[in-house]
Image 1 (cartoon, rainbow, N blue to C red):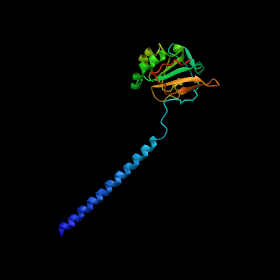
Image 2: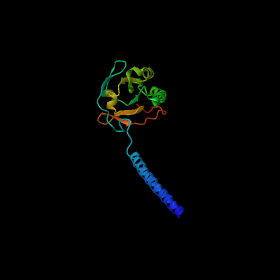
Image 3: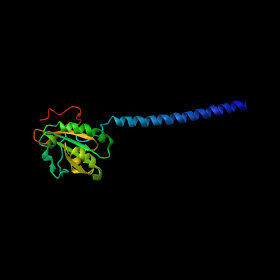
Image 4: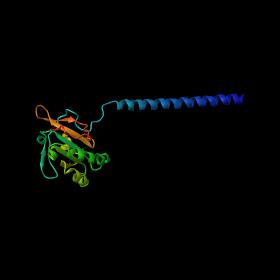
Length: 182
């Protein structure tokens, strides 16, 4: 009889432990379901979306030339890089080659180097022959005008019917030259 009582107590304890663990798993599954449902929400945009109007800005290039929103009167390739961004380093050679194919040359290409100014020299050296380069901190006017949040970001900007510069492509294919750009 003592063995039967001990067996019933052990089985009861095992069932209670199983119940506690099952409730813990169910709670965890609910947390994961909530996290997955949040993933279905719109993703954070790296910059202005297609159709987004470029904000006002007034800055200077590394060559000392003024650069404002009014300079975007023609189709313009605009990119943002950060000196501390590994994907930026990977995309930079493709961007430089692509920028060389832009009709109108460097006057139709703007590159923002965003981050610590002391770390920007390498990027500036590579971008300067093909683009008007602006070096600024993370709260700079150029990146604020384009609402840039991620790096690298490459955009194509054109004036709309009213002449306001808007983003026409926010996922520029750097493998295809811009021969159609006039």
